[in-house]
Amino acid sequence: MLAAVLPAVSDAARARFGWSNAGAPGQNPSHPVFPEIPDSPGGEPCAAERRPVPTGLAATYALGWDDGLVGTLNPAQARDRDTAGLPYVAVLHTKGDARGVIRVAWDERRAEVDVLDDAGHVTSRDAFRVDDESLFLLPHTDGEPITGTTSEEHMVRTVAYGRDGRAACVLDYGGSFQTPDDISRPRADRPDFGSWHDVLAIAGIKGADLSGTVGTPTLPNNDDGVPWAPGHPLRPGDLEAMFTPGARARESGDPVEIELVDAGKLRLPSVRLLATDPDYLTQELPAWEGALTARVAPGTYPVELSIAQNLANDWETVAGARIVVSDEPVESWELGLRKDQHEIDLDDGEFYGVSVDTGTASFTDVEAIPAVAEPAREVSAALEGWHGTVDDGGLVMWHAGYGDGSYPVRVGRDRDGAVTAFVADMLILD
Image 1 (cartoon, rainbow, N blue to C red):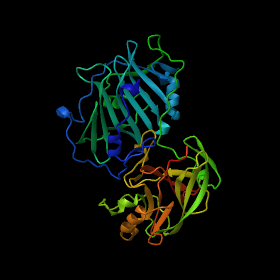
Image 2: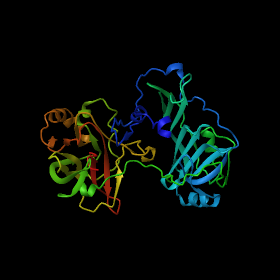
Image 3: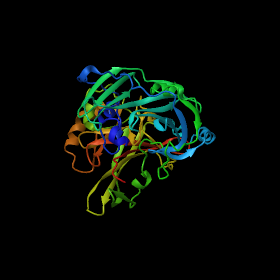
Image 4: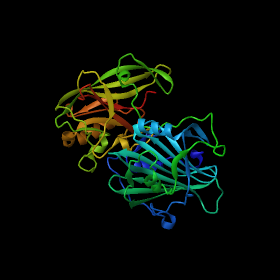
């Protein structure tokens, strides 16, 4: 029901804050950018008042809500799950009608609050994250019927909050109108079990009784429903297999075999590593704050390409590029982040990554930019093989998988936390 009434945060709002979705890679700037765009019809601001919600709502706890309770919990069971950090929901209802749903998963540092209308449609969603024991708001989305239209037509208003104190307001109803605004990101203390009143007030819900009731016949059960599970940012695939010669994997369901190609050596004198489309190096970008925050010792490191050979149609392409920092086994992978990027800000399936507009991606060092920027454009434009180098290892480039898009960079660490590898994943392998 949610998909028909309340679509996910629009691509425009995601792109504005450098978010990308694995299913549709997009622009990924280091910082939010607010171009000159027209005001929305009627000048509706991002801080528009929310629609009223009935007061005096009661709470029933469960494992999920899917047009009915999934796995009803008594308050003691819900409290135990809250303490353990396990996911659960609280359905807020009156007179047998669900009017709100709280979803909680403290181990994942996530919580959501939905407001429902009297027909059970989701009319707003607030997504919260836990940061230093307080909750802050991610995009808030409203879905409202357009005046004078049928109930199937809705206007969706999304407010996406940036850490710089600005917000992007996107109105979607047949067209999309965006309005930048200065709005403080709402924040509240992380609530103890049953003490959600401050957070609910942000969502426009007041006066709810959160002591908990057992499901009644007037609040339906859904025995076939699936318990709620929180989403998460895009997780890495099998990166070890990606760089194992002869390993078998799949690409769009077809079998592929992995071949490794030596792409040369990369010099990292300042160890401020950039993963970028080489064409961007000549553009006026803010002091190249796009360097990854993960650091290694200055030096020269080998770069390898993983070539995925599709065994079903003899097609092949670059599945990933790896900077080999050490031979120590990788114990964990983390998302490569730039300054002011925070993985906790990402929603389900999202990632920060390398934006590619010319079909070519590259690794270089911030210190090398003056020497490699112009020749890199020329080498990229004439690139015929899988890879190329500029300025004797000042930059290493490669054909970017399927071409233009956005691709995550993963940082591998050993058991002592030292960086062992950087991998640019071209999102080729299933």
